[in-house]
Image 1: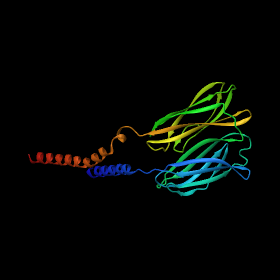
Image 2: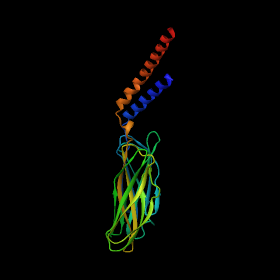
Image 3: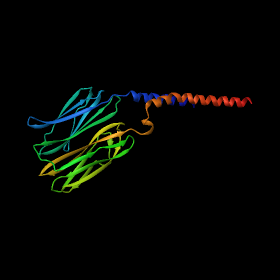
Image 4: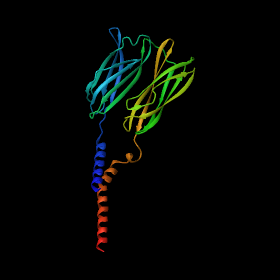
Length: 275
């Protein structure tokens, strides 16, 4: 029994010490632009690693309207290094309008753990229509091992009733039961839609951007609008929040305390045996 307890205490100190020493991170910054190339629109996506450790197996997944493009994998993106990919949009942007653009970057750290980075925006294709609908996200916080409520406010500033087709876009570390919904908005009407958000593989004390895209038709053109929110993952309360030096001290003292108690019990039994 004594050996088992000592081994447990050693593992506890080693694992906590590893967490204390871990300070590196991967921060991928994504930007995009649509250019004209040989008379056809081309989406240019740039990904730069502004963290302090390399990103591995970096790959882009691009969604414009309903069309999906997947870029070639990049074996490694070193610190301060960038990569650029081009995605032709011929046949996608046929009608003038305001099109949503979703860029999802998949990557791994040095240990092979999978992560994702999400960038969402819109592109005005031969159109300057001001959208009548706006979407505003509300920041939220959920515990590391739990769930929380994510909300967006949709507002119709126009004078016509509209049917909005909505889709929630999340990084792979978060999940909801149903990302898609159809929302009816009357003139000058607000509506709050909520989601039960679950932490799938998000890290403690980290923040993730999530976006809700709404699509509808206005003046005969397809219109896309985007609202974003920040989801923060809070660390577990209680033992996980205590300073690490407390665990180190406890881990070091625990074997000695147990040994002292066992020796004291042995001496007591010896004295009783001598009587």
